[in-house]
Structure formats: C-alpha cells, structure tokens
Amino acid sequence: MKLAWCVVALLLPFASAQLEGVGNPAALDRYIQNGLNEANSLLSHQNEILRVANGIIGSPSDAPGLLPEEGETCDGSCSASEEILEIHAVDEGEDDFEITEAEGLNEYQLIKVRQRGARRNHVQTGLGTRIKDVTAKEAVLDVVGKAHSACKQSHSLVLKPYLQSAGSTRMTVRWRTTGGKGKGVVCFGTSPEEMTSVVKEDGLRWPKHVARKDVETWDTIDAAEHQIVLDNLDPHTTYYYTVGSEIVDEARIETRSAEALIPPSRYYSFTTFPQPKAKLEDPIRVWAIGDSGWGDHKAGRVRDAFSNFTGGDWDLTLGLGDLAYLRGKDWEYQKRFFNYLAEQNARVPVFTTPGNHDAFTADMKAQTGPYFELFTNPGDGKSGGVASHHKSYYSFDYGPIHFVSVDSHHLGLHDDPTLYEWL
Image 1 (cartoon, rainbow, N blue to C red):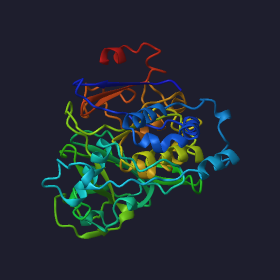
Image 2 (cartoon, rainbow, N blue to C red):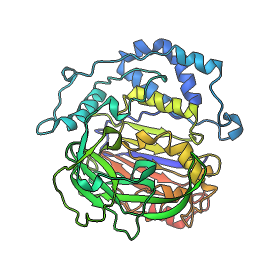
Image 3 (cartoon, one colour):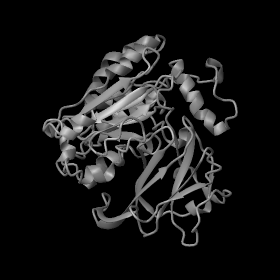
Image 4 (cartoon, rainbow, N blue to C red):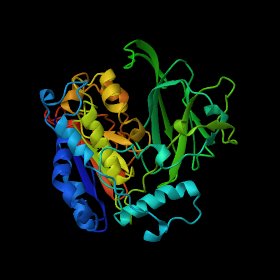
C-alpha cells in the first residue's frame, strides 16, 4: 500500500489536537500483550494514556498470504488474549467537568457535549475486545424517533447510510437500496423526536440505478445508489437523521410536524465539524485505519478495541487505503468494509485515500471504478482548503487542523502537474 496523508495544525501553539487510533490487528495484539498489566496505572496518568493511544497506529503486511483465509477463526493464542480482558467502566458524571456549552441545548445535544467533556478529563470506558459494540445506538439512546411522513417508508437497505464530505455546515449521506425506483429522502433535526427537515434527491444525478451483487445470496440485484447533501447546518452541532424512499404524493419539501414513528434501529446521528481555525478546548479524536481490507474477525477486534477505548466517541475516520482486498471490487467493499463498519460509518464521517488494492479496479486518472463510485470525498473545497476538483486528492478542515489527502502511489509517482500545482 502506498498513499499519503498530511495533517497540518493551524493556530499553533494553541491547537490542542490529539490523534488517537488503532491501525491493525498485529499492533493491537502487541499493545494488548505488553500493556494489559499496566493498564490500571496508565489510566491514572493522562499523558501516558495519550502516548499509548498514539502509539498503536500501524499497518499489517500488504501480503494477503500472511492474513487468514476467509472463514478462519482465531487460534488458541487469540482466544486466550481475549478471555483475560475486562472492561473497567468509569463514571462520566457531570461533576467531573464543567459543561460550558450546555446553555440552551436540548437533552439530545448534551450527549455529545458530555462525551467531549469526558475527553478533556481523559476519561475512558476501558480496554478490551470482547464486549458489545459501544457505538451501537442502544448504548447511548433508545427512544422512538419521530420524523416527517416523507421518511415513513424505505426500500430494503443493501448498504446502510454512511457519512461523507463532512464540514462545519454540511454533511453528505450515502446509502444503497433495492426494491424500488423512488428518489431517496433524508429527514433530520437536532432531536430524534423532531426529524422534520426534509431533503430529497433531485432525480437527475441521484439516485443511480445499477446492477450489483448481493453478498448474502450472490444474486445480481437491481440496486439504487443514493446521495444527499445536507447544507446550511450549524457548526459543532449534533443532528439525528433517518433515510426513506419517495412517496408519490409527497411532492413538496418543507419543514412540518413529525408524523412518522421511527424505531431506534432506523435512525442515526452525526455531529458537524467546528468552524475552520476555531480554537477548541476539547481534544480532537481521529481514527486512522489502513490495510483493513479483509473485514474479518481481526478487523472486527480492531474496531471493537478502538470503540471500547474511546467509548464510541470520535470525530472523524481516515481510511488509509487498501480498504477492500483483493482487488477493490464492489462486492469486496460491501463485504469487507461497509458491512463490518456499518454502525460506525453511519455516525462518524469517513475520508479515504486509495491504496494499491483499491486501484486494481479503478482508473486513477479518469477517476472511475468502484472506489470512486462508492466514496464521495470533498474535492469541491466546501469542507475547507482549496478545491482540487479531483477525487484522488483533496483537503478539509476540522477546527484548527487542516487535512490533506494525496494519492502518492499513482498520481504522485507520475509527477502529475495538476496535483503539484494544487499542493
């Protein structure tokens, strides 16, 4: 895998950004074996905690032969390391920190405020891999949602909603359905009980109707790719949303009362980014993960370990390439990226950089192929930075941090003049 990410911290020395991530199974195993006996003492020393978190990013071998074949399970040593892990819950009560942003916020906004405050005091939920995914919405919120009637029906989901091209005032929602030809609809609001703002696809560029493989049955199905951009959002604000399918008699789009009951399994949440260059009191938390392309039990352990360490609370995900082995086919992305990260991608935006395995079925110069069809990265400059107008390299801002993603394997090695001029 060859790729490049550049992270630039603005307003230094005032920017207090701490990047925390878990990169791969090999690094995770080393971390577990070497660090478990010291975990309790580390939890009382915040600087040591941060060094551990920053130190477990890495990349497993690029050689597929070194990874388990599909269907293999953990061997004895893997099981033994899992069995000795325990979860050490920490009280995240309001008394541990002062909520300075709470004034005027509803109870559903306070969930994220409290999580950020817990970060500031370096409170974690514990270490481990064998627990229920803490990013599941049932772990945070379990209320019946209410939305505009435009979202009361939905075609069958092939890919759950996933977040792209995030910014301080926008969020892009993508998903895939089968079973109907209607336009996609997103209902959203700052409370799960008031998801009454509605945006519908225009029917011109989206939806896109294509033939795709169903990775459960391996049948070829008629699928619809959906994409909706939510604009004019408030910075650093939590929104709740659900997706639906167009109802023929719902021609108008406007804010009205919540008429449809939405079960917790059908709605999600996201938090917009802070304004570019904003000085933040709370640490910034990023999950940087690469060479995850098998989407197997080892990748699942990485996912669970990071979720456990962070309490399911982070700001954005960086996909560092080789997201779908072996050749970056559409069904491989479904099975080995989107399926095992479905809950996470529905709540935290993911920004990607292509690796060499992603490029096997893609044309990097023409910007075509499954990688470009599935990911919508912010080359338009509306998430911060200078517009690249290219899908292989782009930039965006998260508060005081400027991120730059570059395809150094293909375009960089061929001295693409447009790439260098943009940089």
